[in-house]
Image (cartoon, rainbow, N blue to C red; front, side, top):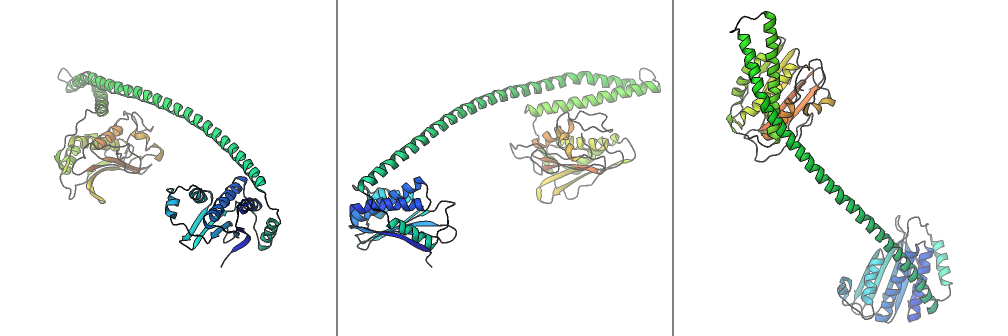
Length: 474
């Protein structure tokens, strides 16, 4: 079904008809609500295509219609002739054809200025050029009666003289040049603003690079300070512990019960400070890139046996049980056993510290979804950790305030995260206040891939730089 309403048809037989074609095209575009620039585009396109029909075919026919199919209305323009056709159309459309009379420029211009352009041509059968332009948004609906009125208005218009058309074209040219100048001025202004912005960005980058260098130096200085101070603290701490143990052995004389208690407190304080120094030194070495991963085969059950004997003295109450599940079907692991043991020691000591009563359970298994990973977990029934504190516990020197948090440096879990990353693994933590926590570390079964990086741990999910939580690991 044809939804096009005919508006106007003009014969193209002489040069004066080209003037009329251009003028009627512009008047019709204005009546249909097109903006001034679109009126000029439509008139120019019609003039050029009509001129091609007159020059190359000796004449033709120009028709205007309005297509209102669907929700979109379009002005349809058709220029047809019975000339020899265009035998080099592909060259014309590709811009390879140069015509002394401008046929190539007229056709390529139609493709650029109109929304659609289609050319049907055959040798000896003439050429038909169909073009369309969408009516602007907000244009009123046009029915047959209104289109008829527009057609009558155009038919009643006086012929346009060549001088009048030339004068009008000159006005259009001046208006277009003025608009181009305004746009050129706007582009120049925007280019200057962009240049100023680029200078600001470059200056900002330079400042950021400078600040980054300052931070790198400060970080290196901090690492050297921690390393040096840790070494300096170790000797006096070792002496303090040796003297305390000597006094407790009573080899130089008997101590009263109160004296033994006081010396025991000194020894415990020295032990805590010694552990802090060890953690600081380990962190400093990792940050300085001086920690070497020594991989070797080891068995999980042997590791659990050693940890059981080492950590049993930490049980401060008979109300807490430390349970090591026997590994079932686990193959030999390739990795750095001392560093794996250090991670588990931190998990277990935290779990014992924050579990007043109940159980701390240590287990190992292959991941069901990835048999190349082994998961070592420490689950407790302690005080748990609030969701808003799950990120805090992995920050260096950060602690969550609680009655059971009587001592500690806040370095244990950050150190575990760094160690897990060195081993090519990641940590995972889940916790619920009043119910307990589970810290686990996922490690490659056959050792870390070379140069594998890691990212900081995130609570409740696995990430490249691990983190697994036990009841209140702080």
